[in-house]
Length: 434
Picture 1 (cartoon, rainbow, N blue to C red):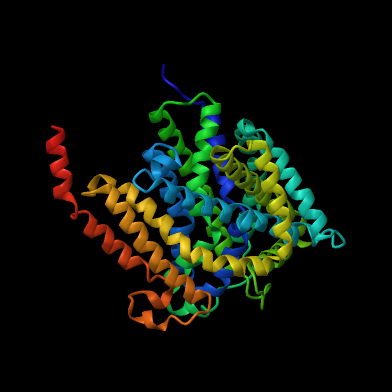
Picture 2: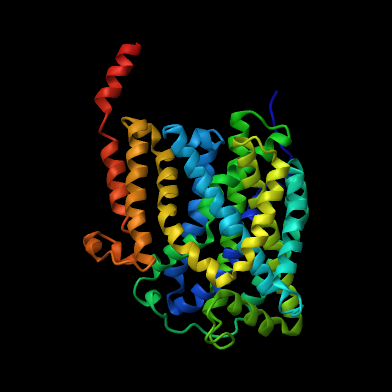
């Protein structure tokens, strides 16, 4: 029997994935990047779109074509190594960084300007209690988020985008800092902060679960609908980022001296819409952060319940409480702590996705995966040490090291080499099997 979804369900699936992605980092980083990029807006935005839209899209496609699960994606790696990698990614996008950040951004940008007396601790408890409530019924995610919360969020974003493009608040000024000299690369690295490639590795699996709840179990149908959802989500993300970058690039007069994108966005929206602007912004930010928090808590709970004796619902409570606690660290401190971790693990995630697409070209997939992942990790750790402030000047000879991408060429070189190495051994095994 052919398994199909209605068009409304496909759109809802894409909206749900879009909502999972569109969270705190997606909102706070592009406006400031746009302001600093100024007249170098296009190359900076292009670099950002590569990591914040292109990589997540490719990652979802990689999850789809590899079989729809983490186990399929990492089948050529040692089981324990793959499990540790997955656990680290879930901890990063879950209770350690990304999920608590949703609560912090929601508080700073959506609640504090309207309810200054509301304490962060009280809000974080309320926010993550609501996120836990929606995460509780895992199978109903597509209906709750894809058909209810996301359309409301998207309407708010369209209103904001129309205001930005129809009534820009200033002209573009000269680019600042690294955006003046290497805007494409700076934008590319800035896209790390969204953590969306990590999220895509896990959200893809969550979408597969949602499809199964809708009766889609065949591999071909699952791949088709997963890729369809990814394309819808990518289009939505691109729309948001282009709007926010342009907002930032035309914000110099209304948000001069802003030290983060949240301030840029807040002041710009108030300039556009007056006193009601804060209400528009609060609705957008609160919905965006809440939907992402729901997705992250659900994905983390699903993973840890699969690999431990503890139930999914118990993990929802554990993750929700942990997020509420970590959220009280403070936004600036949380971002500062996350940057070295992202520099260390993002290249590994990128390498894993790239290997999925060239798997059939590898002479010895098992050896290739192990070597390429190891090379990407080792060189990424050097980049991470640099952004942490450690003296790693010995490695200045590495190509692209100065711009924080010393891992790239060694990883690509390892992939190229492994398309040839091990071929003879593979041929011998095939002959014996025949």
